Each structure stands twice: as structure tokens, then as C-alpha cells.
Length: 303
Picture 1 (cartoon, rainbow, N blue to C red):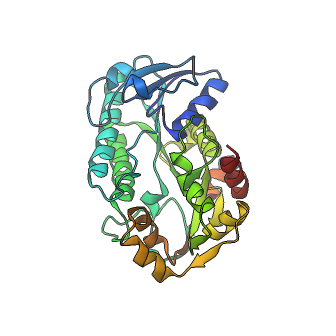
Picture 2: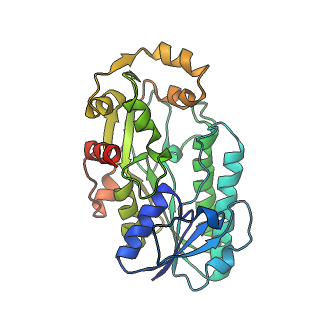
């Protein structure tokens, strides 16, 4: 098959591309400019597109059998920037509308658990039927961008009669195929301090996430489905111990105070006191075999 992967220089996309090439597929990757194209893939065709513009998307899909829409704006600089929402939704609009024009029906899209996030005090297991409330005050602009982008995807899937599957990962970690370390920056921060908040992360291994995209692509039963992708739950303290640290757990009040002055900590505050967890049972029922989350963290560290 000939496949289009959007955001080809990204952490998740590079792993998807690697696995597609290993399976013998012909792959086209989109990048914002040619300076962004990864140098690790010699057998890849790159095209320049932008999530915020319609130019080039239809042409990029010439002869394509299916699309893996992975590209979405990142919230590293400012997770509360409302422009993230506009860009993520515009990206879905341009990709899905171009697919309709180009006659490409099959799309597997990377969403996020942020699109299925309840209030922190919620208990029990959350599955794919749950949708985040856009009025939830605990959701920043980055998380809302995931919600609104996926909602737009299902709206356009119905409008254009597209065969869509969405994949919803948690905190994505794992070995990097490029020099970019931003994907594992939370782990790096934990590794460099003994003081950690009382927070649990729902860990998704990037290699298993890529494999789930391919599994969904090749299984027509996943069409019309949302699929949660999670390897397991690890607290910051557990991760710290895996890194050989003896963590000191911060009181919740200390994190809240620090977050007023340190921008990168603000996204953690809504996670305090969280007692719910997402279930990956649907993915497993489709044949997904996620590795242990502790191994994910160790492999990310070693990379």
C-alpha cells in the first residue's frame, strides 16, 4: 500500500514510518518545511504542507491508499495558548477535506486521552465511550485541542463518508529515532530531581502506539471506533525509583504554589488527586500486545 503519514518528523510518526517501511509499504511523509525532514529514512518521499493551510494536501495524497494523520500542534511552549485549538482543528479540516477530494477513504488518526478525560475526582475505569467535557476547567488549551480535533474528525467522517479510526494514547514515552528529546522531557525532569508530585501517569510506549496504528489500519473492524492506547500506570515516584533515585514526594499544596511561578508545572495541577484510570481492553481485544510500562521507561532512559 501507499500511505501518507502527516507530521513525519514527529516522535510518534517516525516510529509509525519505521514500522510501515519494515512491512514493505510505500510511504509519503508531510513536513512543514524540508529542513524538518528526518534524515534517518532514505526511502521516503517528503512533501511540504502546513496544518493551517489547505495548499498541497490534495497533491500529497495522489495515489495514496490510506492516511495516518499524526500531526498536531504541541503544547511545550504554552499549553494554555488557545491558538493550539484553532491549529489542531484546522489540520483535521484540511486533511479530511483533501482526502475527500483525492478519493482516499481510510484514515487512522492520533487523538489523545485528553479527549476522554473526566474530572480529577472521578473514580473507576474510563473507556472509549467517554468524551471530555469542553467546560471542564481542568483542561488547558492543549488538551482541548485534542478534544475539538477529534470531534471535528468524526463530524467530517460522517459528512464525507470516510472510514476513520482514532487512537487515544496517554503520556507517550520510549526510545527516540532522532536526536529530539522533547518527547521524554517529563522523564528527564524526574531523573534530575528527588522531589516529585503525588501524580500517576498513564504511560503509552511509542513503539506499541505505532503498532496499534498499523493494527487498526489493517483491521476493518476498527473503522468507526475510538481505541485507547495505554501500557500501564506509573507514579512519578515509581519512575524516579526506576532511575535509581530515592524520591521525596511533594505535598499537593507545594506543587500548587510552585505552579504559580513555574509555567511547566501548571499542567500537572489538574492531575493531583486523580483516581480514575483508562482501560486498554478494547485494544487488547483487537490483538494489541503492549509491553510493561516499566520497560518503556527504562528503554526511554537508555535511549
